[in-house]
Each structure stands twice: as C-alpha cells, then as structure tokens.
Amino acid sequence: MISKRLKQFLEDESVSYEVIEGLEKDYAKIIMVRAGLGNAMVVMPASCEIDLGKLGVLLDVPEVTVSSDAESAGLFPDCEAGAMPAIGRLYGLPCYIDETLLDGPSVCFKGGNHREGIRISSYEYWRIAQAEVGDFRLRKIAV
Image 1 (cartoon, rainbow, N blue to C red):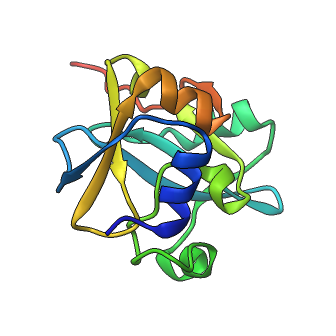
Image 2 (spheres, rainbow, N blue to C red; image 1 turned 120 degrees about the horizontal axis):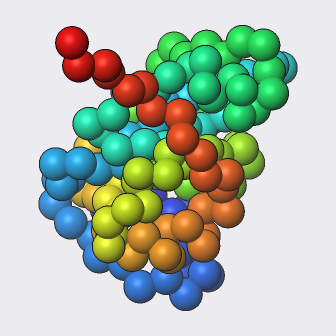
C-alpha cells in the first residue's frame, strides 16, 4: 500500500492518480542533496544524471553535494529507504524538477515503498509539486 501521507495528500489535492505495480522504465528518481545549509529534493528521469554544477548555479550556492542514504533516512519516516515520493513539499523540503521530466504525458514515481508506484499527469504533478523547474541534467558530449 502506498504511503498514507501520500494517499491523503493526493486526495486533498483532488489528484486523479493510478497505483501501479513496480515502476515504468523512465520513472522519476529522487536525488537528495545538501545545498548551503539545508537538504533539498531533486527529481529527474531515471535515465538522466545530475549535473551538480548546474544545480548549484540554479540554487545560487557555491557547492551542492549528494546526500548519503543515512543522511536523508530520517526525513521520510513513513517510507521504505529509497522509496520516497517525488513531492518535496510533502516532507517540508524544497524540490527541484528537471524540465525533461515534464515532457511526457505522465509522471511515475515511488509511492513510499519499492513495490508500488504512482502515475499522474505531468500537469498535475507540476501543479502539486510546487517545485522549481530547471535544466540540471548532465549532457554527455559525443566524440
């Protein structure tokens, strides 16, 4: 069963969603980072890699580092480790979404466990996430 907090949040926000078994190929992955003095949630397609330099420019901080699982474990008390939903405001965290995540018709993300995911429209995800959208994926240069 998905996180009770997530389920209540989606219902409170009147979001039409689908609970799916497992996750789609290019689901929304979460990368927890430390930027300045605080934690932040970064959400991007699973197939992409993060460019910490670009993210630092977006956040206007000199250094951004990826948090360890141990550092972020206590932030999501109702979730299995590494299965937190891709909505930072649900946990009082600033959230940053890579723009490519919103290119498709829907977004799929973990529902608080490793067995179930949530699929909602890209528009609804953007609306409820209330996150800053930017370009901070790593681009590989072909040689």
